[in-house]
Image (cartoon, rainbow, N blue to C red; front, side, top):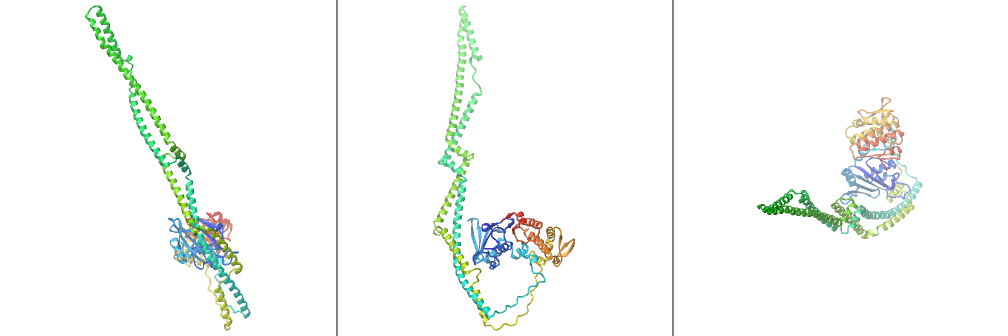
Amino acid sequence: MILLEFAAQGVRGVAPAGGRATLRPGYNVVSADGAALRRLLEALLHPDPRDGEALPRAPGGPAGAAVRAGLTLVGDDRVTYRLVRDFTAGAQLHRFDAERRAFSLVSQDLAEIAAALRAPIGVPPRARQGALLTIAAADLPSRRPSVAGAAAAVPQRAPLSPEQARRRREQLEGERVRARASEKLQQELDGLQARATELEVALRDGARLREALAAAGRARDELAPAAAARDALGDADAALAAYEKAAARRADAVARVQAERAGIEEAEASGAPLPFWRAPPFWAGAGAGALLAAAGVAGAAAATGMRYLALLDIPAFGWAAWVALRWVSAQEGWERIARRRRVVDDWQAKVEAQFERDGAAVRGALAALGLARPTELREVLGKLAEAEAAVTGARARLEAWEAKPEARGAAAEKARLDEQQAALEARLASEAGGFVRDVRSIEAELQRLEAEATAPAPPAPAPVVAAPAAAEPLRELLQRAAAELGGSAAAAGRGVAEKAGQVLAGLTSQRLGGVQVDDRGGLHVLVAGRPAAAISLPPADRDLVFLAMKLAFLEQGLAGGRRVGLVDDAFQGLSDGARRFAARLLKQAARAGQVVHATADLAFREAADHGA
């Protein structure tokens, strides 16, 4: 178990800022009256119907003012619980429901609440808390009755004289009148407080709904850039669908362009056609034709048969012409490849330009949000839609709550009830005065006075019998620890003797040394290197031995983890160095659980993990 928060109202010496104080795991120092806060926390952790009688009431308030307290804690089952006690009316234990994100009532019965605090919450029994996990100034040996000093029994009260009885009867009659008036006013005040509690619950529901609406609004506001991008897109779904289609068309066009470029590059790999005038076949045909023509002319001039050779120049010149025409055809094909490349380039430019126009809005939204892909934009827009739906739902729930008749006038009625309650408390203070007993106890005393007036003279008082002697505090400390740890008092003391000796040496600046425990559970301390019985030490030194043992037991009790130690101003009379040494020990012990130390001492506040 770990304490998270406590609140108090009407308890003298416990007035945290804002009515509540936050606690954390580790060493917590709370500015409050040590004994009052310790009794308050014990009353919350170990509830009993008579707890209100032991709590000091805050001065200056009206008579019969309510004493309330609350405690929020995490149990051993890792669930958060909230305990609220009105020490004159009752108590409520609530359990946090993670699914509903709200506290649900566990019980209003004090016995059931005490059982739930023990399990599953994990509050240790009162005896174990006091023996191992509490360091109280009231338990110091110097503040306890001495072993030899037995309190005498209270002698029997002597009867009143007739005049004293008459005056006492008049006082009781006036007190009964005030008590009846106070009882009537208190009944009215209780009714107002009950109705105010109901209104507080209703107003808390409204506050919870408003907080839920504010949280949903904050979550939506965090997505404001996404909302601006969606507004710029218009129909976001249509824009994203169009972008995806344009991207698909562009991908198809790019694939076709790449295929065309591959064909062009393959055609260009052979190079431009060789000009015919540089081709050997052309010159072979042209040269052969020229020679044959010259031979034919010569044969014709000589009137020989060689003139017929001139006919052979026709195929030779035809071959040369065919080579030239073939070059013309190849040149035209080369020019077509160049024109085809220009067409492909123009087509690719048009595709890219069209894609730029079609996807400009979506790309602008991606750039504004720092995203890379349209799928990420779709996810962000989906989150925006969910956030807006959450705002709409929270607003609808709040409007439905505000539309209820009991909610419309709850705030005004609560303010009116507060005014009536303040007026009743003022009347109660003025008419009834301070503390007023109940009518039945006053009437019982009146009846006793009447019975004494008519009774015969009392017999001689019996002799006073001495009360049994009080237990020695150090031995009682070991016995209580042994009852919780199991075993004998000697075994319990020896289990922490080494640690207690170190603590005692630190508290006394080595003036007192190690702690030893004999077989009968007696404590011995080394003084100047020689053992001495702790019971024989001066009261101040006995207090130091007691504190050393309590610190050692506290560290042992917290070692199991998730336990809470309670400490008040038990170290008040020590030197500054001793107090700072004790603060370091408390902080070290609190690492395994939690220590709540009620003190205003600066030495402890400086060492605390958390101050409240």
